[in-house]
Amino acid sequence: MSRFNFVVAHIKFIVDRLNKQAVFNTNFKKNEPKAEKIFRTNFQKLGQIVRIFVLSCVIIEAGRRAARKFLLYNAPQLEQMTTSIGKRVNPLSRRPRRQRLVVAVRGAAGSGKSFFAASMADAGLGRLCYFDVERKARLLPGSDGSKFDALEIQHPDELPEFIDWALDGEGREQNYGCYALDSWAMYFGRKHRETVMAVRDRNGDPTAQPTAEELSSDQMIYQEVLRRLCVDSGACVVITDQIGAKGKEDREENEMGRVLPLTSGGLEYFVDVLFEAQVRIEDFKTVRVFLVVKSNSPAFPIGMEIINPLFADLLALINTDSALPITPPPINEVPELLDDEPELTLVRPAGPTVEELLAKAEQNGFSQADLITAARYYCNGQTDLYRLSEEQLIDLDRRLTARIEKEVMQREQSLATAIDAEPVAAVAQNGRGRARRG
Image (cartoon, rainbow, N blue to C red; front, side, top):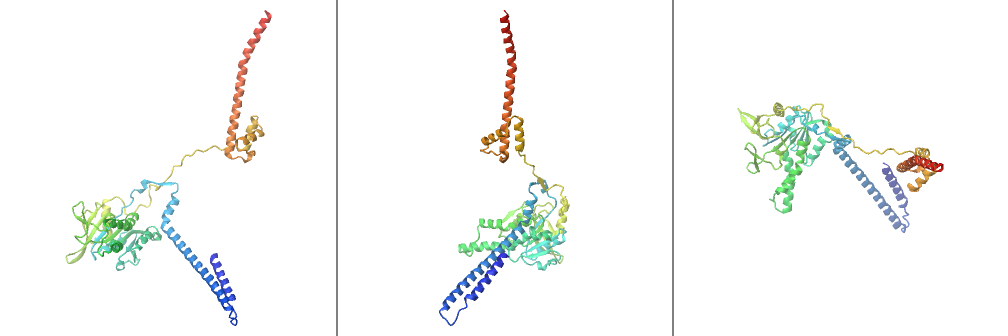
């Protein structure tokens, strides 16, 4: 704000200067070039100041937005870092505590895929977040927010940002309990089209197709959307997809021997159960039939047909074969983080103070001058004992202790020598006395 006030004041100063110096006497033509030059120079300075001011505002606003986006998308990581300092993850806390189901529904238009995905809102899982890439959720009842939140994706590049918003950003305040993507084929198709057009422009061939390596690279990049929803969310997910043209797609046989069409997007690798939806006429009534074509759950064997299914019906089938609840228990008995064991460090004993060193020296017959002389010799010429560091005091105390122990040892040796010499002297004196008497 101070910078803004400074710029405004400077602009006012320039304008006043322009008004004063641009006034010239029209009767004297010789002053016209000079006044015009002054006016042009000041006007150029004013333009430079305005450009610098606008550029500064743009840079400040860009930095503010970048910081806000960083904090928005990295808030969970930052919060986890601040709460887990000095702790480590307890692997036992990662055991499954709830049952969830990740389903993909593939079929023709009008087979009931979107209606099935919207049925998650009535399955008791919490609020549904519905990513609408096809922008048809407006036809579903409750999509206006009364039952679930249908988020229209106007451009495919918006989908990863919307998912980050729902999982890690401000969307967490909505307490979403399940997610739906309608449809994966629309998102992957629009993104894959960009690759195809780039290949054709590069080769100059309007019929050129991406190589297997380029298709694999597209899958690794675009499938991050599936990883975020199917893996990172930890919730129940429904993803709709379009069925490929029969006879044109690659094929792979499953364990039942049935030919399973593979989509170029690789959706089947991220889901627990893959259904093929179709419409039948039974007893003059239209019914929706979901056929299991890929399954990782024993509750949904391959070849199983479900008539007019709702997502709650699938959860009921899982509950019969699994002991895990659909909703997680409120309290986890196993702690998620473990305290790190403290590292053992060698704690050095605190050194003596100058007063303690002086008292020790006086008790053993050394003066303060002796300590100063030793400090000057061993402590880089320092003669002020009170300016010695802790390490220097410890070293000086060690040397003083060694000197004291050495003197004590010398006194003990001298005393022992004197005691041993007394009997010998007595014997020698007795021998000289006998010699005189004889």
